[in-house]
Length: 122
Image (cartoon, rainbow, N blue to C red; front, top):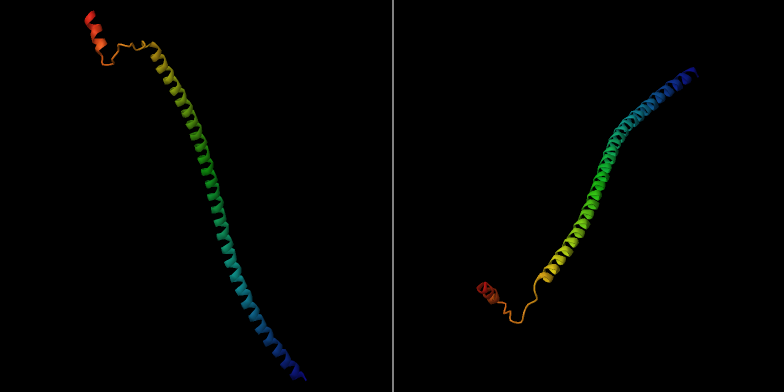
């Protein structure tokens, strides 16, 4: 009976060693996976920071583009207003010049002969 107990203890010791080796192997494998996951987490965190930085740069660039667009639109409106005022001023000048011109006479042929005659009379 003592021999059976010793045999059973040896068997339990061998089973314990085998189970311990398997558990250590699994723990080692899990540790390797955990380290890989941590490295992946760090890489993803860095990438997330980079994406956030790029997103902020894009938002800033869009804001600058919108401000430039508003400024260009305002300058365009100001130039259109200035051009319309200039056009109105040119029209007024043309109208006032027409008022200052003498009305055409019936004898005016439009060939400059009257101008020549006026020069001869003087």
